[in-house]
Image 1 (cartoon, protein in one colour):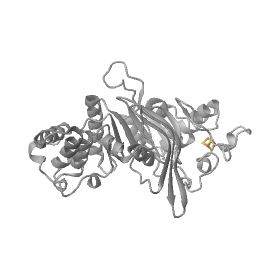
Image 2: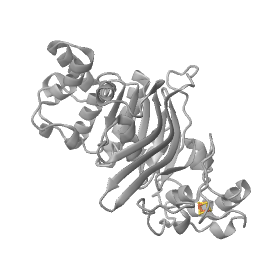
Image 3: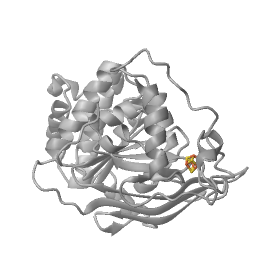
Image 4: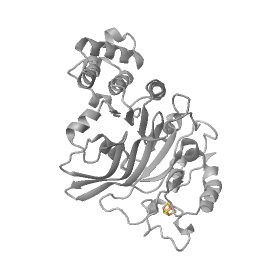
Length: 353
Ligand code: SF4
């Protein structure tokens, strides 16, 4: 199921990260206290590559990416750390600078196309407008570009459908239109937040294929945010697993899916429905619930749900000592490399069938 892909373009990859995030922290002030939604997150995204960020809702994956886009309300949000986009530091950037970047250098596709599209304007107008705004195109040029983009994302009869309103499109077509809107200015980075969750399985596969095709054509970097490891396995090159506002495992898609190292990733895999192998194997859910981000535990955030802490060497406490995620391939877990290998082979693999 996992696949390692060559960088887009086939040849040697430019291995300087297009997006580099370091020690990102996002805090929300609420009536109940301060929510520590993202806690020291670091990751890179290379040009022409797709990074899948996977985790349950509340893990911080969407909040972190909204911080990259500058979408949080500064009145109740504090953001610290470093966000370098194509070498430009974004943390603390003003709204005008962020507006110039949004839709131009970086664009976002949301889960629900109905909230991304205005019911009062035609689909074509909504695709053309960012092109006019960011590229200074005339009305006629922008309309031609909208037709071209509708064609690229697979909408039949684009010259006619460009004048339709969103309610005249099916759910799958609306999501295609939203992708066309995001890509109209040829952004270098596309952030797709659960782009297929609201769609049926066939349309979901078509949209994922489309994202890959467009990435090949436009050479964009993509961040794909999802709760579904199956989606990650289909389109991602690299994976970041998030839990409780932190990254707990990272690696290439092949490494993380074939030799996962973190007990939470093991739980995600054993609870995921299988389409191949022993499909009769019983799914094993992860018991318990994610930690409160109002008062996160001082040690490992997964400790209350993890079945492995007693196996950890005495000198390290999962309850008190927060494990760090190493640079490159690795997991934020106190288990030794030998314990990770043994537990995965003896306890997790048999459950996967
Ligand atoms: Fe489990 Fe301890 Fe590893 Fe956390 S650090 S995942 S509690 S073994």
